[in-house]
Image 1 (cartoon, helix red, strand yellow):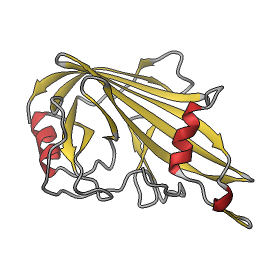
Image 2 (cartoon, one colour):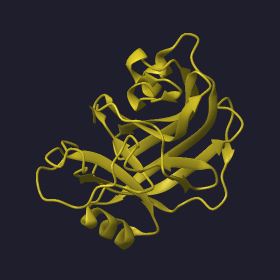
Image 3 (cartoon, helix red, strand yellow):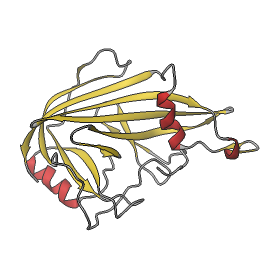
Length: 211
């Protein structure tokens, strides 16, 4: 993963509270469609949402969220930062035709999911950083950790938002100017004790149609 700064130009909102970052300075570039290989996954398709729960006050309990999206589509796209490498993406949509159109456009999701690691068997992992930057002599960032798993025709998709605090690298300190790296924000998720979990979104869905 490239080391990029986390001075984000904008943050995008999904549902009632969940943010997904997408800018030239973020973890993910906002890619456009391109031809090339398809991601190695049998999960590509349209899914009907069965469960849409979450919490804005920690991650220990969840309740149903109003105005839940009806569908989710999982599809293959090519990000701008690595246009020759297929990646698994996902966006919410209103129906089968709408979902298929989103997948056909095959762009990097502006509001949605981008999975960087994993497989159908082991699960897929992705991260987003909706906001962050230097505070005094430290770096602070909200990191969203996405985990996608599948059993038969059903998928479970969980996003937890963590508040991370980490020290900048010595080479990233230039007087009063501090550069904070996305890779270090994500690595801080492995700290012990772990950073506090601020928000959670839990989605369950069943395959409705292919692409």
